[in-house]
Image 1: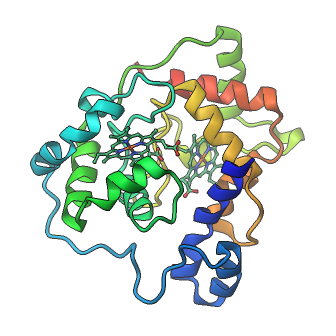
Image 2 (image 1 turned 60 degrees about the vertical axis):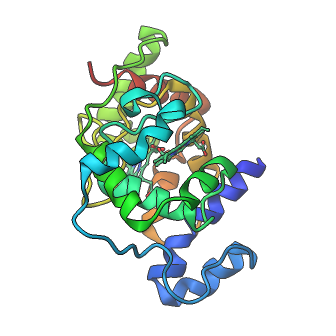
Length: 231
Ligand code: HEC
Ligand code: HEC
């Protein structure tokens, strides 16, 4: 519960930065702690990102995120094949202490703008890890239907509308690739998005709105399905 509340705080951040008229709202949601004071801590400055250097800089990440940034730990997300825009943004918000997570805040606190860009460029060149097929086939079939088709009578939009039929998301739109997350991690992230309060504006609300009509069984089914996508 506490985690949910804290996640909602960092979801408010883009508004504080990019939508000045809404900054008052976001500021009050931030409760005075961690709000950027002048300047934009998420506007990074770097030369052309260098994936080879990113590989070097990310050696220290592999103990947790796995060799080749493919995680087999259900608590740690894979980064292999994740989009540049998504990785870059997440590292910037951790470094600015706007996304909770003491470990990642500390890790990101040691990275320069160039390190962040190079790591994001490196992660994007990697093949996503193998699929997780640990959950029941019936659950995955149910999840697949919700993912690709949705459920009109229950107002469930197909996840594929934003994440694509292959689940690989969209770099330009900042839509995460979601194919190689562990089912446990995927379910936890879905809970957080679903339980986040409303901010009344479209973008960070996208996931929250998409998940409102889903029951707990639906969430388990889509989590099982997305983690099984890929080879
Ligand atoms: C001690 C373990 C540990 C180390 C070392 C570590 N991470 Fe993480 N990282 C995590 C965990 C756990 C999470 C998930 C956090 C959560 O659930 O809030 C995470 C989350 C992330 C995310 C967000 C991914 C998403 O899908 O939202 C990124 C990006 C990331 N780490 C990058 C890195 C990079 C780059 C490094 C090395 C410079 C690194 N991490 C080192 C444990 C670690
Ligand atoms: C309207 C567009 C939209 C729809 C529909 C949508 N998503 Fe998302 N999703 C996003 C965006 C954008 C992000 C990146 C986080 C953010 O900016 O809010 C995201 C993030 C995620 C993440 C987090 C990835 C990570 O690494 O932590 C998961 C998991 C996810 N979506 C699963 C789903 C599932 C399952 C559905 C269908 C039930 C769905 N999404 C429907 C737009 C959408």
